Image (cartoon, rainbow, N blue to C red):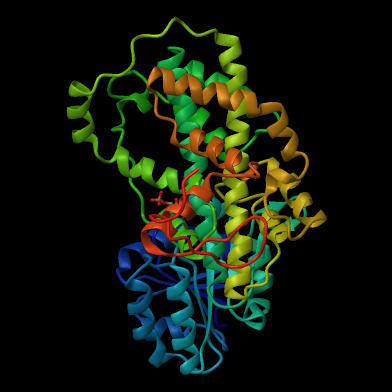
Length: 471
Ligand code: 6PG
């Protein structure tokens, strides 16, 4: 009997996906360049139908034709290198699926390369980390619809169960799946940054211990703000450092790393002209955090504000909860806006309601609010910005004063809140009918004759500013 599915790359994600498939009754052949990982997978196998292979030709001939092969290798060069060894062994009609965090433009190039050899290629964003890969990830696929249809049954079997069925979706041609996953990560960065800002405000503003902060987050996580990222943060804040006996979080160096998807999301937003400042600020916050030694030096020469009187605890907590809700909604709103613009620009043609549905379970940014987001996009598929729709508009109406208070408090006490303040700036700009960009246009025309438009009649105008009469 030949295996129904192949997995190349058996690090933890690849192993867990292979096990997940096999536990759902699909026979899987596994291959990894170094045999230790294949053996590590086999050590975890009980009676699941998993066939270990130790050379690419052996792997290829173990698969039923036409073959379906999931590549779970490190994003970047390996996603080009492995197929270049694999292609000569494959036959027309065989399907390669890149399940890593590849850049959507690379996926588009790889689809063309595969097609020129008569092979099929899908780019699939997989979210949920190691646990998700085993227990049910969210899957975001792009490429030809017919190729997705071929593997849909297996994806439906292994995906997380959302409210409305399995969290797997087809998002259109080319690199659409990887695009959706990239923006997912952009939102992921912004939510993580917002939670980090809450932690900092509670710690330095109110003097709370990590376990007191965990209690606040646990309470938020009971109701409408429930989310996976908040849930894991509660666990993190309560975790003991086995070396010191103190809180582990306080022993961790405050320099965040990144693999690049958040940065790509912002780069792509800039290319599109999509307004995602809060997502961008989260990337910059990681960059600033990485300047640890510089920051420690600067702390000694750049004083902060004079000490503030103690803050009223209950009022601050209430403001922070409302501000957190608004900043998180803003992160999703900007991400969905980017996806809306990208879908048009790149001709993906996916629905935002479907994106929200796939994100309701399995993925890192899963949250109770996604159900309402899905409904909002169902009601109005071309909704320009989530905050225009209920119940999100209501969050703004009821929470804007709190967001303002939190941003003021942070600025007054010298605690950096790039996510909170960019969310507020963005929402204030978005709801302002008349911005000062008229002056910017005048300046551009003054020094560069770039012309401007007028409010009172159509056309492009230029003024010889130096010679023009003054009021
Ligand atoms: C997921 C995660 C996952 C991973 C990213 C982020 O959806 O399962 O987004 O893909 O955690 O690579 O990593 P960085 O924070 O290193 O960019």
